[in-house]
Image (cartoon, rainbow, N blue to C red; front, side, top):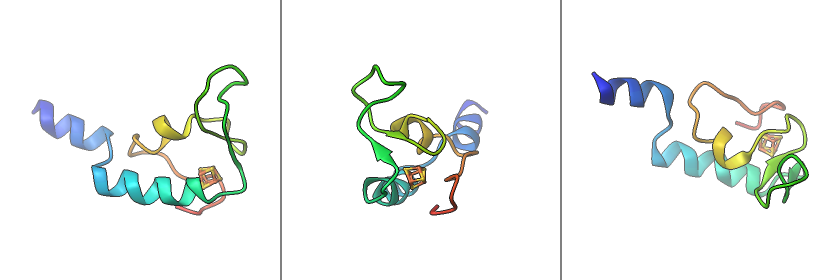
Amino acid sequence: MGFELFKALFTDKKLRKTRLEFCNKCEHKRDKWLTLFNEDSCSKCSCSIQKKVTLKNTSCPIDKW
Ligand code: SF4
């Protein structure tokens, strides 16, 4: 049951990698998150890229993935 919930909420390694490949090449990628943290973020949605690619129920705001 716990593992099923985990799988429902989070992406697997392969999907994270695919999403990251798009973000890493994207012109909207920034190297700060919330102007404070040294973490890649998306200037379109202001999300942390590392966190965003991990959550299953998310999408790229400009439909790259
Ligand atoms: S989520 Fe989409 S718009 Fe944002 S950095 Fe990734 S590919 Fe670019």
